[in-house]
Length: 220
Image (cartoon, rainbow, N blue to C red; front, top):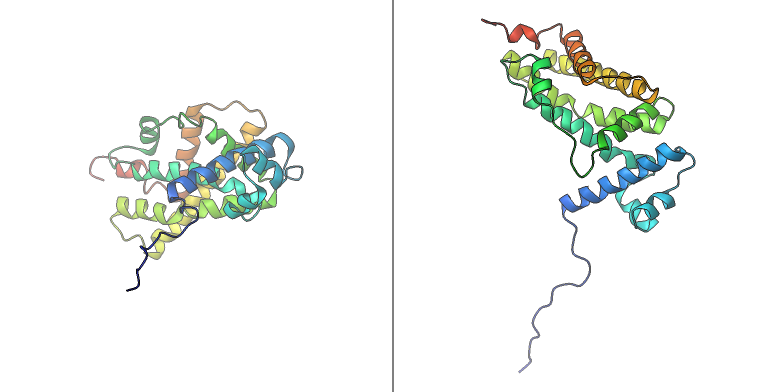
């Protein structure tokens, strides 16, 4: 009688978890931005980025399609943090009050991530590739902004008027962030209060106050 051998698990590397993959992409992004800031985009190669994080160039291209796209994780992390802050915005507070109360420090493991993201945004003035990535990343916030606006107005997020309002608000926030990034890059001193005031101004300008203080007043 033939003896059947026990089945064996296929050999090879175990698939990387999404969390681990995300952390690896973020590590690459930090090193890439460090190099871009130090020597410029044109003078930075994929080989240098890969070497900086201890990877082969072939592995690097498994994570990113180009050296320019390496900035995406840092930009996304910054954008996601702001979107999360908006999700936590309670109806009884103005945006200024909420941003001050909800201020959260950067991750202890990467205190320079916010600064690095702003540096990329500033560089996008003269680097079209960075500009394209920044615009795509920021556009992802529009559906969440539509949800925030719809919730505060008691309307559906897929209504045309709400979606247009969300797109307008996203543009206002993008412009405000870009102004802040450029000012920092140019050495202009800006306080946290200045940032809060400018972001709040952008929200009011984009929404004509309909999701600002108007909804925090008694009887609103």
